[in-house]
Image (tube, rainbow, N blue to C red; front, side, top):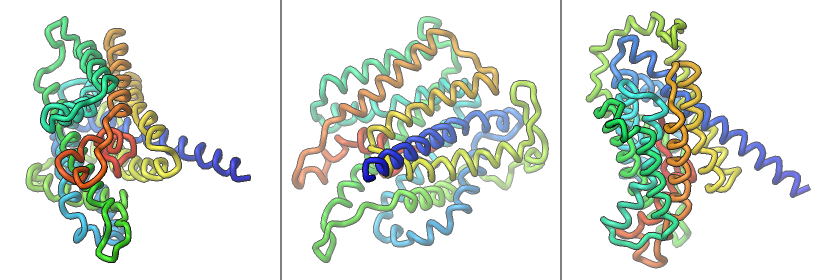
Length: 347
């Protein structure tokens, strides 16, 4: 009986993880037609974040204690994982293919290991180093370095900026998680922050930041009443925006968080890597963005390297040192592998 329930739980978790990967992977495909229709990338990001923040307000109110208990974590998630990642990613896809931008972002696990090795000066395993080499080598195939970088250089830099924003949140979230594993004032073990609560306040913080940066009062709102082209087919702009807010943000995070609680972080991390595959396939079918055979092979190598890098991340040492500068050593496995409680950023 218990084995059957466990199997059902894992099956449901796997289904939810796949749903989350599909929902996240569809964000760029829905956003790019809006950008090509005339909306500024920052305005699309603001619409996505502000809309999702409004929907998540009841969840934020339920976890309002986080404002007092984890202000730095909420600010970091809002600035890096929400405002930073999405602004850079949406700006990048306005200049380069969706699949390429997302694959560049998958350098984040390798960059975290670089932080551990060269900034914190802590050793990394050979397997982790191999993952970094594979990720970088695969990326060279994706961007076709032998052709002198056939893609827009600024677009690639923006995608790399999204990866760097993820690194900033990985390090911050790992530090916050280490603090959360201590004891409270009553001597009991402190509970980690609820992931949906952090998501909700991160969206609120991100919306506030993006309001100042994007200045939505200057947006051409009439564009949302028109149509946007998807590979020659007209689609209502409001429908694409609804998909971005409801499916690619709210549903994606909700299903992702629940799936992690039914699966191990390692399994959830493997399924999350399918996001790049799904985004590439959707962009191929819906937007007509075709990638060459070397680029597809390079994308597979990038994902393989990212998975090896996150799986082989060194564990933080035990004792008081774990709460200090060395705490980010486990950021990759903890952050990438288990959604928000471990640092997955929205796309």
